[in-house]
Length: 191
Image 1: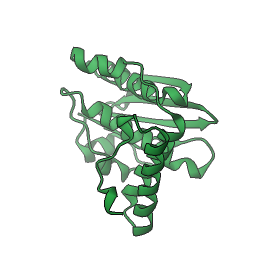
Image 2: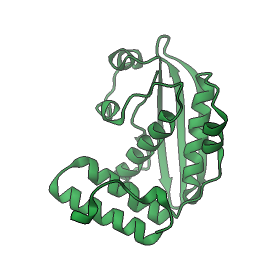
Image 3: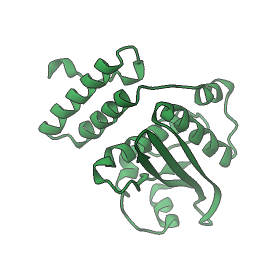
Image 4: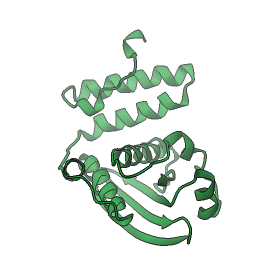
């Protein structure tokens, strides 16, 4: 069992919180597709955003064997994710790595980090899961940014944020209508 703690925004720009939260959510989603892992939900881990507690204590609260913590920095069209996998019982590193890519390669970057984490916890991926995470996946950076902003607003659940979310989702789809990853399962037609 594993928990991905909210990635810390180290860009120095508080308006980039949506991006750090989006990367956290994407990493959780990629790991949740690995059948051999029990991955704690985004809702449960987000309560630890900005909280300074010993990792073994967080692990006990979440009842997990391992924790992923890290940071994300976005500068221009480049993204760097630093992640570390911690054994919850011993509070020791199992694995740590930094990755840097162009924004257009963000999906491949997320898959690479997820594959490294599964390797760090010694999970052998099924061939289909390994192929999915390893496949080169390009994305229109501006469309993906709109999508992440939409997710960020959607999760906040205020009426104004929901309206902003719908607008961001429409902008994402308008920017890249052929990218099915950007289509959302929300009833935006009603807005």
